[in-house]
Image: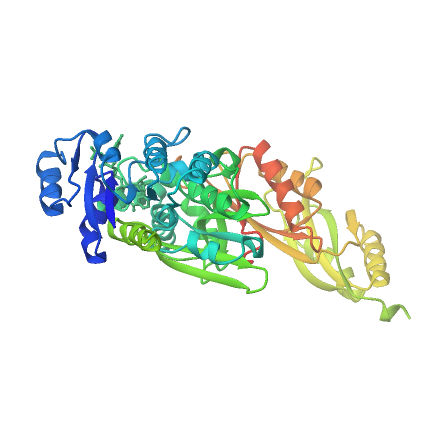
Length: 313
Length: 176
Ligand SMILES: NC(=O)c1ccc[n+]([C@@H]2O[C@H](COP(=O)([O-])OP(=O)(O)OC[C@H]3O[C@@H](n4cnc5c(N)ncnc54)[C@H](OP(=O)(O)O)[C@@H]3O)[C@@H](O)[C@H]2O)c1
């Protein structure tokens, strides 16, 4: 397959790096100001080297990439709320050209799910987005593997940064500010960790899950979201005295979305530690499924992207 | 025969003077009349308007024995403010967090009990160390069987008014 990759950050560059091991050809790589395009296949190593040294990928304009030759557009630009731009326009212009789209960017399927599905319906192309929820963990495809009527609830730990902070606060009785600074030093938290700690990122993933389960209609406005910024060390120690701990849990059930810090059994399935993610899928006839693993990271997310690409062949 | 009546959990609310021996004095009639003591929640930090300490005692007994216990308590001069014969089948643990927690604790607790139709069995307070590390309180609530969700909603409502955050168990999932 010929891949055009929009976004040359952690995810976009990882997809470019790993594409050849899956026998795909990269015909375009774009960032916020430039693009490299070659219908016969780019020299990925050279493009990524240019990105590293000059912070540019090529001489073409990003729009040329969308006009170029490719079977699948990989959308890996920043997740934004509201109009979900620039991702939304990238997705729709590829679909309007009857190309497939694989998303890592959560915005279009969280904030404008019904809009993109409408465009997809008129297109010969298909849109897949398993990488948007749970990184390497196949969450969307696992839910879709069931008849969505038979899935009664989906819940879990969907943000590795928040989970790292809470689990470190609990094990070492440290306060929030201290652990957050440490997480930033370790590269676990970004310089601006707002969306991770205020629950927005986990909520967007839950919104995507709700859109899959209930056939669309959800945006972040429909989620009740609380963050972990105000969880003090004292709350974690009170929980621990009782055999419990606190995790940021996203919960989709009964057509509603709740995200917030919750008490969970300390040695229970949901109390994963560090940056791990876990998703529990509650089914009507097959009990409970637990899927856990690495919920973020360039190569992890790229692996999920390329798994989706494989389904389009 | 009355002794074959079902044994149930009951909550007795007492108000005791803050004097040594008062609590022991109140527990005597319970044991003497065949009640099985389940828990005592002694709100030492709180005072009623009359300057007494509120105490909630959970007792297991047949309805008939429970009536005898309440009568015996009153005979012994204990101030029984409420004697519930309700059965609280479920337990719910929540943690409340917020900088205003300590100053409003007793109001928060009494509102939770009246608005969520539950009985607070135990409160543990952990005082925060700084402005960025506010205090927390763990509440163990006895709620009517099957009414945990409704109780939780009521707790959330009270917490919202009192500017507190509620950390609740996950509904539906593995209950903690
Ligand atoms: N990182 C993860 O673990 C992970 C996991 C799951 C999903 N995701 C999602 O995947 C997406 C990419 O994540 P990331 O970590 O790779 O982000 P990132 O490192 O911030 O990279 C974003 C890339 O998008 C480019 N970009 C920004 N605006 C653009 C525009 N208008 N047109 C074309 N390119 C544009 C940026 O260009 P410049 O280089 O010029 O700034 C940058 O190369 C995000 O939506 C994220 O939420 C990430």
